[in-house]
Image (cartoon, rainbow, N blue to C red; front, side, top):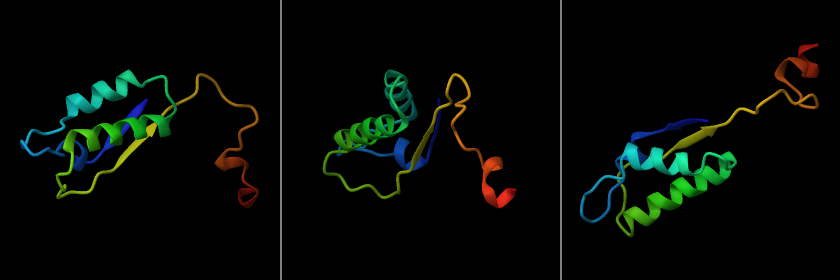
Length: 86
């Protein structure tokens, strides 16, 4: 699994100014490592919302989760199979 996120996620803070932090983000993603990417993102952003409470955040928050399958999917269409490239 690959996690890409902006500083807005790790620098999100609650009323006490404590930061959400990269360690907390990584622990959460590791705990959800068997989940599908949308579920991982829902858990991550839910945890950030719970952590921050009603405090408005000054920065945007963006995250991308990428997971690879164990093997190729023989039915999957790839970019190279696209009719426009024929």
